[in-house]
Length: 251
Image 1 (cartoon, rainbow, N blue to C red):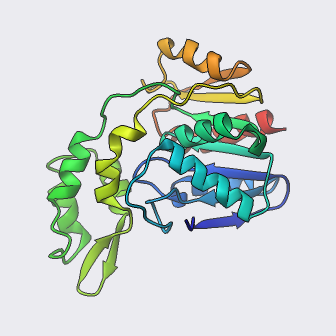
Image 2: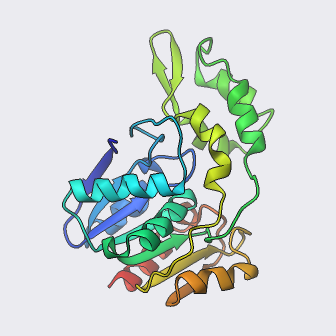
Image 3: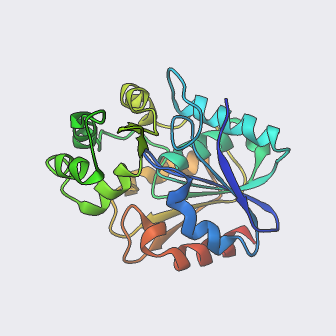
């Protein structure tokens, strides 16, 4: 399938993978900060952003799509960064095709089974009659009944694209909802021996102490760094600190 990406900078190849409902634009700040020292490839995951849509999806399929994209770009032994769902996909790729990844950095997610965090988000997105919308303000008003946090609504509504007299979703919302459970599963068993860094938002509960054993069984060389005063979107809360930490790790 076709994956949309943007390339910037010069140096060793570094691939960035965003989270659920997101796009490569969500990692734009750290991409710009990393570009002076790396050739940065920011990629839209399948069924997200401007990448192609599929009838179904899961971690293995997304990782395979990224692997095929790497082959198309003649890239191997890349430095890899993934946030949230992108981190799950990055781990799946490193475990299934370790020869493609030289360094693995995972932001605020672990290789464990997760419960649903997005029931209200899906309900709110499905409550929008996008064919009848005349402006984004209307969408925000409806979504606010389900998602009270304004920054989260702004993030979600970046998926709305003006088309003709109405709007459409850029992401493949039906498939993301149908296949959501398949994105929450634990990552495959296996071992990636390469350098691995887990970044945890200090105020986030996505990486818990119980994840230590599943992390080390798959990534025996893993380090964990806690980024102070950040939540789940640590790269947005403290982009300069995250980039300094990544550059030290990737060096």
